[in-house]
Image (tube, rainbow, N blue to C red; front, side, top):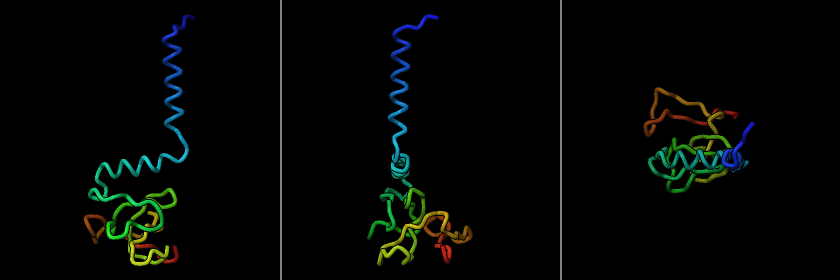
Length: 112
């Protein structure tokens, strides 16, 4: 079996790039950056954390909380004061018949 130096080098480079891509904790950041580039919130920032961005985020904007995607909704569960709260999609109840900013209206499921 013949293996050239170039083949061995190519294999090492491929393995090194695969290891760099799979860094722990970066998938959420990459998704967040991708959503911002795609204009998910009409070029407003995609919030990360329990509270959305004060005086910037609007109802139904996409956000990330606890590593999950969610929506900015009015709720007091996270002690955000007058700022919208980021609630994970799994804790939301949405009404597809009622649109708000072009998206189904979502609110936190009672007790969730």
